[in-house]
Image (tube, rainbow, N blue to C red; front, side):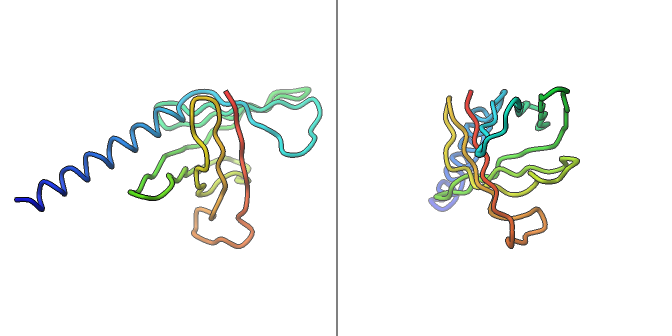
Length: 127
């Protein structure tokens, strides 16, 4: 009986942590360019239905869509999984380094197929 209670408690904590992370990431984020890119803005909108909308504005506006999900494990940083961008440059599995009301910082640790060679990509956002 004690083991069942521990299992149920652990499951509850896991589910509530995942929902909390999903709630924090939902919404529109302003992308921070890590190099000088003049006259370009980019926003990423993590919707509640797990669709991700990226809007890049220069002289024209480009809109791309993808899918996202959060994978949480006990005693580990959450993982942000981004898939199905057309250009595939940002698809992959990211370790979430910072996630709060103002900032989102994540670092890609592998591509979707599991390979890690050349996978490094850091994405930073502010609200």
